[in-house]
Each structure stands twice: as C-alpha cells, then as structure tokens.
Length: 195
Image (cartoon, rainbow, N blue to C red; front, side):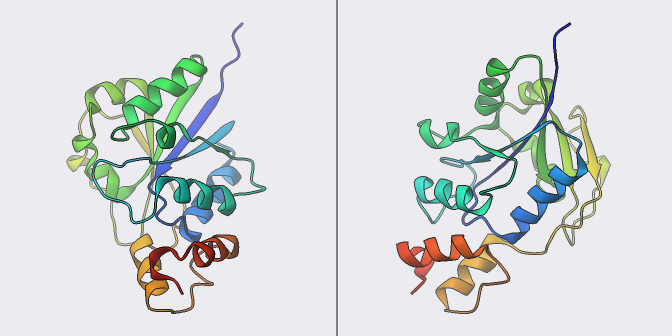
C-alpha cells in the first residue's frame, strides 16, 4: 500500500511577511488537518509588483517562521519568469505524486481565482482551503464553478503588508505587526523606507 499524505501550500508575496501570516500558519498547524505545510514565497508575482527583492522576501519568511514545523519552498524564487501556481503545483506533485495537495488562500482571493494562470488545469491538480478574512464574506455563487474548495474557521488578523510598509516608511511602531526578527532584518537592510 502506498503511503499518502496531505500537504497544504501557503503562497504569497510576503512583502513583508507579517503577524497575520504567522498567525494563519500557526492556526493551520494547530488544526492538524495536514501532514505537511509548505510556505512558498512568490518570486515574480504576475498580478502585483513586490517592493522588496525576492531574496529579501525569502529570508524574511524564513526568519518569521523559524522553529515552526513548516517547510519553506524557494522554487518560485529560483525559477525565472512570472510565478504561477500551476508550475509550483506540478513541481510539488512530481516530487510527491501520492500526496493530496491543498492551496490555502484568503476569501478575497477566492473570488479572483478565475483570473489565475491556467486555472482550469490548476483546479484538476489541487483543492483550495479558504480562510475568511475580516470584511470578506464568501459568496459561493461568485466562485469559479469547478474549483474544489472548502473553508476553515480561523479568525484572521486584520493586518496587511500595505499597512506594514506604510508604518515602516513613516517610522511608526510595528512591534504588533511583524515578528521582531523580520523588523530587525528590514531595519538592517533599510527596506520599505525604514530608518
């Protein structure tokens, strides 16, 4: 009998990774729904332009979740060209073809899933687990009709990377927004206008 496992994929630009992301990762781990959780920083997200380099975002991600039972996957950082979920899904499936893969997304992203590159192929390879974000109610009638998804009740922290970058640029206190190791790294590298 072939051993199977359940693998969760949590991707994002992590520009920068913040306490909202860390809270979500911790909550997914505590749910014990998955055998493995893989965090995938986007290399070159095709729907947004990151402010920090992909190398800096990868390092901040590693610092933020150091000590947690999570894998950080750098395939999108090392791959050239735009970062697409389809490429990452295929790579992970090739490495472990017997696992069941679930991509974790916010409820706001679920409504835009029809715009994902090759979504008709993506949806045949992986399922989606939707995290409710503050201010976003899932309207199932607006979701791509053939995407397999479920939701989980995790109270997401209402923090955005945009908010973190603005606070850093204006010199406001960010202790409640980002892990201390990430703040130290940002300060040393003078990212996001931090002094």
